[in-house]
Amino acid sequence: MMDDGAVQPAQAFRIKTAGRASRAVWTAAFGILLALVLLPTFAGRNIIQDLIFLFYMLALAQCWNLLAGYAGLISVGQQAFVGFGGYLLFALTLLGGINPLLAIPIAGFLSAIFALPTALIVFRLRGAYFAIGTWVVAEVYRLVFAQFKSLGGGTGTSLSPSVTSAVPGIEWVRTLLDVRTPVARDIVSYWVALALMIGTLVFVYLVLRSRRGLALGAIRDHEAAAAGLGVDIYRTKLAVYIATAAVTGMVGALIYLQKARISPDAAFSVLDWTAYVIFIVVIGGIGTMEGPVIGAVIFYLMQRYLADFGAWYLILLGTLGILIMLFAPKGLWGLIAERYGLTLFPTGRLLVVTANKPQSKN
Image (tube, rainbow, N blue to C red; front, side):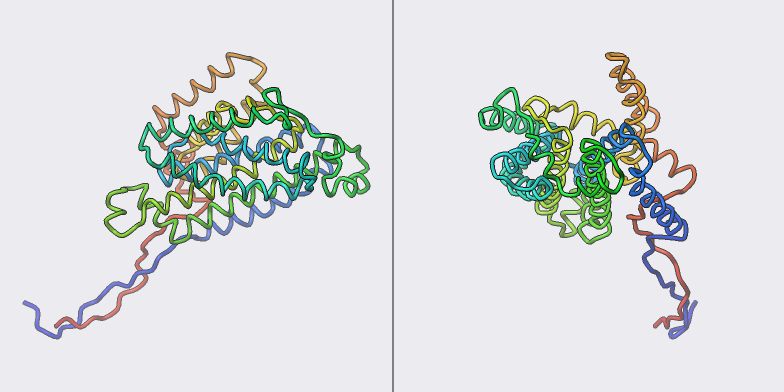
């Protein structure tokens, strides 16, 4: 037996997130970011346009992953905010005379405002009904915007040259790099897309590292248990839905600033802005920040080199998605992380034993 008052060792703990490997990765990421910023000084126009596509698809994938992978909101209607942001850009620039770059954050802000009444409708639904409900809402948005004759009605409209040439920085890029106006416009769009993509990554990372991120993790693991621990499920999901709508609206505005033409069918396309995004997240790894990055790169490469095969391209996409879901349900990043123990975005928490402290046992 043990006498009263005997001194027993007690373990001390601390919460650990990033380690040395993570810091090394962030150092390498800074170098990659610097290279991407300087890329337009020596890269061709085709590469610039391809990377713009990659950047905005990655931003959309991160938003959908935050919704579905963490908040459990399986939406197939995110094209509603892509199209909404795109049409707001056209309305603000063509009808309101607002500078195109200023119109992008305004489109994001207004998307967040309209996401609130949208959420009040679709949040009454659960599971598959929620997914279908978001799709129906997106179709309603498409039909509504098709009625605006000032924005081209059902056939769409284009940005006037006076608007596309009014993007700040075009003249500066023309003079600095000695390029034509269309190339300078693409370079400015590239830098804006890069900034928006990096901003999205930072936003998602900060959310997941915050107390709200802990709540999202609890909701993802077991919603009923999270509610029992005091997590406000409704408000947490609502905040994530509105925030991702704002980012998605800004991405949509940027997409159609770069395209310079919009139509209801293209802006609210479930294939282009939701189905492909879901594919990116699923093959990369849902519920991780690294997964959408890998998925976006793979999707870009397939789009770049296989899109000319027509229907076979879609068959290959579907086959790859099915194989990943069957043999790697955690996605490609899940395989890499389990095999090598890598973490590029340390959002999880680890309970680490730091030392033993003497403790008196009475």
